Length: 483
Ligand code: NAD
Image (cartoon, rainbow, N blue to C red; front, side):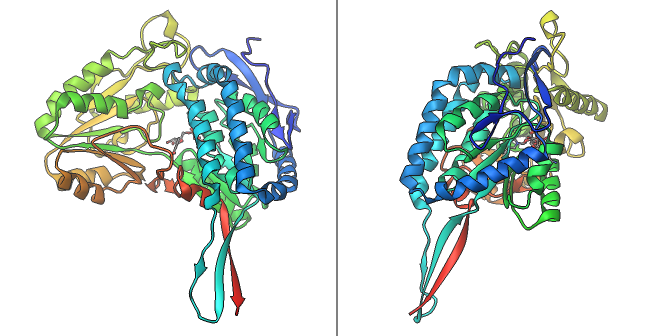
């Protein structure tokens, strides 16, 4: 067995455990299809155990002062950093993401722990002068037991960074890692066991359809936060509603436009378009600007440069620092991306680079696709409308701004957008008309802690990464005091 880590236990009630089923699921390195580890195949019985543990643990956690909770969270972050190199090696092998940018993931997770640890004092209520004869005041209380369901592209980072707000506000969390990149969660389980009070942080691995579904259906988990595809997000809303009234927030997919006005330098735009597409994660990033919309005057110059940069990208071993792009995450991702590429060819989009597996023995096994650019993509084509979540950039031209905005908005998603012009009025007026939750002006790429992130339309509900996320893990209680 070529397991790269011996860690193979979930975390329930402060103990590293196998699943009640006694079953395991193996995980594969997407670069070569080798089996590299295993995780417990969680079941409903495990969910019940985790809920019992969380129920016993959260009141004492919520009773701590924000300062005390914050100190424990910071300690958790320090312990994660101590194992950052080990986590990185496992994460790269298990996700296929390239090592250089993945070095940031543990740091982002720790930054988020520290940020929410620091703002926990902002869990404040209000006094409201509604009537002269009363003192109306609000207090915030944690839900108690909350769940976080995580996608495959940055498993450890999301499991930590996107539970920090819930911990800071006094909740116990149950984390469900993704099926296809679950191994880093086994290391996280060990760190969390040593750093956090028992029962405050629980990790349940296994299939979405079994353990994920059991989490969503558990009547005592009222608050569910999900990052993943729109299809699963809608299924979770439906399932949750069958059981009881729940607070579900959704961070879903995107088909994000990058709208380029004619007053731009084609070299700068080409660099930005490639960066915004996040080829470095094989395009498997919700915020990727996967629809490049260039004004007629610049279209040919930008397309030529984008094609040139993308064609020169080094696809290779994700463990190597000089690789620009690794393999897709799984066999499912591979066949999905290839079906979009084949469909685009059939529908008449013009392939300018990529579209197939790289040559050479190294790429015979694994889920490899070259970074791909399609030009002259039309709004009726599937690659224009649907999230591919792969390394496929669609390029189209425009010359009427009204038409371009209609085209940008003409998809089901509204997560991010990027607008490029030196004219501040054009930029702000366009931003006002684009239906997206996070818009860059003359930029692409990162979002920053403290700044809300989330989508409109089918890209989601709720905003994360800022104070709003922390408050969303609390319920408001009113005290109405008669004077
Ligand atoms: P997915 O929807 O297939 O799975 C996400 C998680 O949901 C996994 O842990 C899975 O096991 C679980 N799950 C599946 N079925 C379930 C069910 N019935 N009940 C409960 N849980 C279930 O998504 P994915 O393929 O892992 O991730 C890719 C998607 O995530 C893309 O659409 C991408 O845009 C989106 N994403 C969004 C953001 C954001 O912040 N908006 C960030 C990263 C990824």
